[in-house]
Length: 214
Image (cartoon, rainbow, N blue to C red):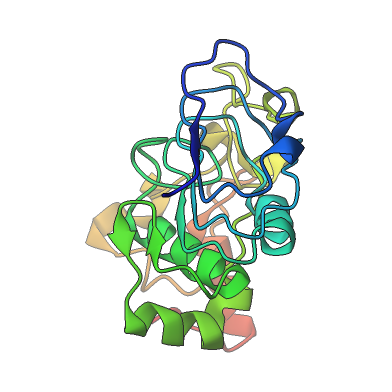
């Protein structure tokens, strides 16, 4: 008979103190709780199934290192619904490629797994984990307090501060297009619009350096 324990929807369950009395556990279901990165399991040498779906785990590497130490017989692991498991259930910004990298890293850390989340581990995944798994580390998300979002007053831009005001640039100076002449063919600097940044000046600089846009 399989020795199993289920603790789901346990209100504010944040700690697993007391599990040391269940050293012969083979299945442990801990879904829908508030377990986080401080999760500590006792040594469970016979545990082969562990589900931690819908908890508050964000640090994947620390969890996997801990499981490798205390659950050497683990074959089935599910982490769906945690930030540490990147997929569309957590964020629409995540996609299948993010999830594949996550699986590769988990299998690198826990090579004996036969099932991860809702999928059986394939031979191809095992081979990839051996070769690339160590490079697939999923970075722990920063705390929300450390995240600075762009505001309407100061929108994010990769440009230097001196280049953010579009009014400081002219895409096509009128003086460079007069008489039907294309600004691309005008090789000399533009003296009709002093004090302003002109594409003609940029072209002249490139011409002197013998660098021409393709």
